[in-house]
Length: 378
Image 1 (cartoon, rainbow, N blue to C red):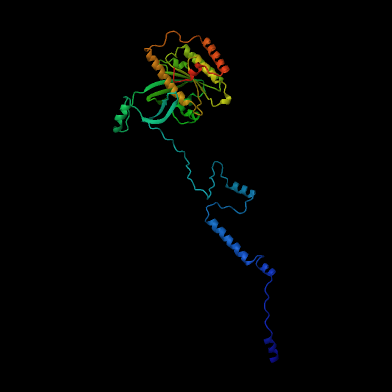
Image 2: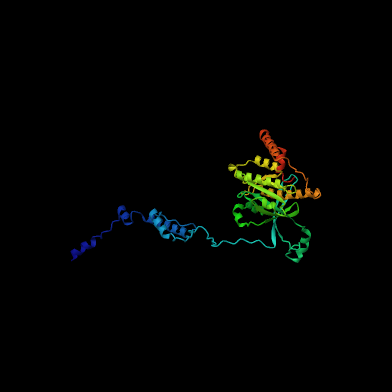
């Protein structure tokens, strides 16, 4: 027994050998413990950044196109329903109104007043639009308060009313022009013309400190206005520069006014509309001036679509009416002459054509053509 116990005491216990590099790599999955700790720390940082960030979260791997098409087909709303827009975390939610806000109706006791001034050089200055209280039937103002009634009634003067006939072929822009007359803002007058009825449209104007009211009447022919017991105070004959037939129609209307002797005490203005359509122009500016000079009318070209020369035309209409009234009163209420104040129409037309040719050749405009474009003189 002693012999057996001795070797057991002297023989040391075998120690475990350390694992080699290959064994350690197999145990940790091919990476060291320090590398695993770095990966865990990076993953934790990404989660923390995504949790407290306001940017939209994006998927790491893009969804295949087939899966996207299937998902969009499942989310597609049934027929007759509208899908809601996708919301993102990067933007604030804005409330959407399902019904359209009704437009504010104008006050029945007020009206829009357009204010203009004419400079010494003949320019037009638009002073803007304002709203004023209407007058009562007795001629006084309809005051909003007793304190404001006294000074306003002393400042306001009697308003002169004039009736203007807008004549021209269908589609030349008569209704749209009347609609643009009513405001200083550039509006899409061609879309608003269906909201305007066929009755008279009133435009209140303050020109050089004197207020007047113009009532515009839309008519296709001058015959219905000539047959009235009280003809209008002015005639505005409109044609389209892209329509040759409307120009011929305007010439017929001017000839009818001359034949019925309607332009002795009333002004006539020839207006060429739609000059913004320059590539489709069929009537030149010189042709319009020649026609206006032939029939002793004023001439101007406008564009209702871009609100070009519309204010100049409005002020010119009122200015021509006032000048005719002053000339009529200066003659003692009599017309200029009982005899015809114009020569033979063919002679006048030939003379205007000769002046037009000289203008084209020498490049210098004739004084007759310049005068017909000046709406501030007779």
